Image 1 (cartoon, rainbow, N blue to C red):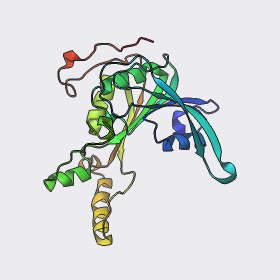
Image 2: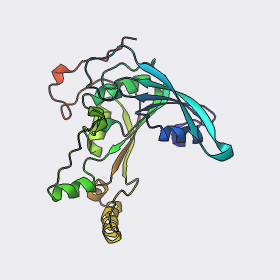
Image 3: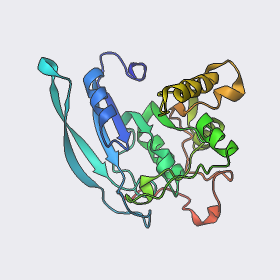
Length: 256
């Protein structure tokens, strides 16, 4: 994360999908930054674009013992698929979109176009999301098991609605005018729960994704994209991702 910041300068960060604020607390602890958080309205369909964002303050305690710190951060609540982002152009150095894009159900392009608008020239977006073709999903399909997500009592945003491959994510981010600086896949944690022998076998199987073979590398659990804003940021709906594109707005609703 320090590689995204300028030494001696307070980095202004917008974190999309900030709740439950674990990563927010880590940033406040270890990075010289000012963070603004955004959460989507839970339990709602995108509907029509709203007019105002709800605003709140969240108090975060981070660290331990004598090094404990308390910070208050601004939180905005609105629909990142349709609502205008309530910030002026060139407001932030970094936008974080971590474990968020897979929850969207209508228009990730709107989120990306608005993200590019409010990034300062040369600003960076860091995006992470589960890999749609990870090894776990591959094994489940081989076993004739569904890879679909459960319905959620939290509403449509409480589940994964559209997961991506690394190539798909690169295409979408690039189509919206960003310059992709880096894209990589990782296994950030081992989630398999079982008896010791089965866990050992699963661990060996999953470790195969670390072999220097492109096919296996693309089976890792998570995708990370580091992209830079540009003067070509645009609202676009690539045919690969959208049906009935004529029903989507051709410009951002920017009524501030």
